[in-house]
Image (cartoon, rainbow over all chains, first blue to last red; front, side):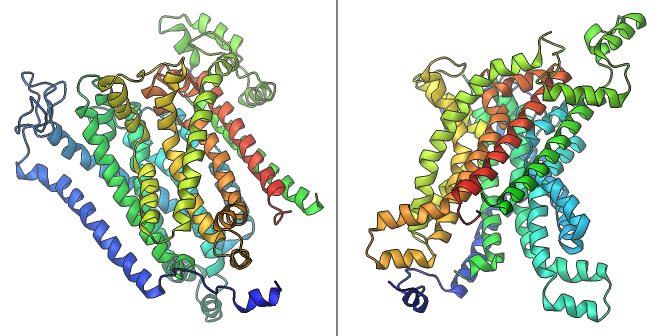
Length: 300
Length: 307
């Protein structure tokens, strides 16, 4: 077998390569079909409480720990059952969803914002700026940040600002790393040289020309970060270190359900299912966007 | 080993030591920001003289810089201070809990590797088919479930409803099954996804075509030629995920009342026992950095392209 032969026909007989156009179109439609249920969930969570269709969310000590309607002993007055205080499961699920989704969105923004900015700076300025930021990225990725997050919360107490600080600290580095390497390659492209020759200011080049070229990737990373933020929040709230009463998120509902597990499993079942569905949809969209924006993957 | 390799490893070691120093400093700062520990130890009724005496005993009346260097010296000699709540050496307590966590991590990680790698290879060799879609979705699902919730539901099903397995605590092999399965899920999904990506890259290489053309069996091409070349990132993620599991399994240990490091961390946080919190963070940071070093060395040893 000579090398010449291989070079002549490097991909001969390679099976099943979808054409470029088809792949692009599928990824766009799949984002739509995945976004639809996500939009419906968000809409329901924010609008349902306003319609008055939900059961009364107040305490009712005559109807505690009722099973969901589809089990023996359940009633359609409380479709997803009640908790130990007789509060309706469905109403609680919908109302806690608001805080959960909000934490997911804000938690992603506070991580992606600084991450993108630092990645841009490192990739565009290079030199000592890049060295410093790269060491910080390496340090963050080489450290047990969940434990450090726990220590911060132990120190400062649980509140929303502390939660966002923790989400920002745990999420910025992977985004900064991706943005940095993308910026490194974009700054060498012809149009950047042209802009500089034409006398455009550095700030203008970075924010008006380099950043828009990264936008697709950043949006994909932000989408994935929403899922991560929701999962981190749910774990922290479950341990009593994230969202704590009187506020309620799906994670803190899981914490309340933990004590009732042996006799009333449904109290913990539905919030966990809601988190799973939401995060799965978000991750599927993020994956599709990432594939869509990665020219290397798109070519296949 | 060539000089360039040594220089590369040297640079990595320097970066890792810098990371370690950042972590140690953060842990120190967190310990100091938490207010006066004498109030926690002696309670609100203590006399000012008593508190002053204790501050002197703990070395808190020294300048901050002196305290910092004492602390660093302690870290490098294995002395992580004493717990406020248990009146014991933190190092002893951490080492007491370590075997339980190691047992769980070893069981969980083995499961994750045994399922994750074949799943990823299956998806990569049948790219674009329903096998691929099924395996990929399963892996993504594994990364979307709050694992501790899955643990709770496994307890309901196998311990409460069916009564096959114990719901918590440690002891026999039976006690290990549910926590290990729960622990395995996330790294399994991660390994499967990475294996698929890495394998599908490797299988596109020209040498795969040439191996096929030489009439080598598909199994042999996939595992000997493909997998061997796709292995490096997978190995990396396995080592790094082990580090994450060692410190990040707090919620899983909590669900199963598993007496490991995670539970100890949670206890120390709930009792505001900051020396112990600090000690656990330091311990985990050292483990993390060591594992990162292992990854770098593996790169140079296993992959001739890096050498």
